[in-house]
Image (cartoon, rainbow, N blue to C red):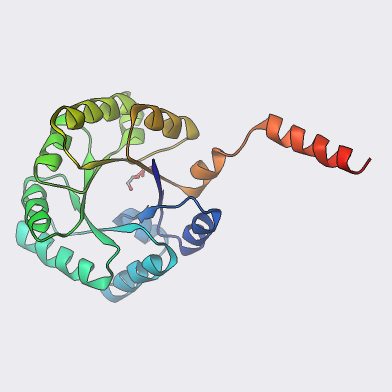
Length: 215
Ligand code: G3P
């Protein structure tokens, strides 16, 4: 399973990269705004800065919601760096644009996916990644992990190569369950990735070993 970090914070991206387990980055307009990145030139430069830190795919989201605008923005984004993946919302013009990008050999990430039907459409359009937001489904009393199970089943039934990128991942059990189901990628904040490491018996055991080593 691939691990992506879901942030536009360069320090956190560097830290995750230094951990040695990072496979890519996802961003969105909210995450860019959180870092105070404003203005088209600064936003584009920030994507390049991210690409220069990591070795894997970096999702950069379009703002346009009409077909021509999505295509125009996406083509500008992919010119920035070979690692850029165009992140496109799950709307009718978005699906049409994903089909266009797929035919041009441009990687895409279909975002804001909340149902199996949406994921099926994204795969039919040839999306490289589909991003079901599991935490936001949990927030409205709907089981986000069940959606990952449904998408896995559907994609396996038909051999769709679109990778399931579980997004809105909030805690370590989301990651473990996604791994059991067979999600291809999880994207989450640094603290959620780091939380996989923690176990009190590891800490206690290490403290004991270090104490004994001094004897
Ligand atoms: O990048 C999209 C997704 O991961 C957002 O997560 O926590 O804002 O629901 P969250």
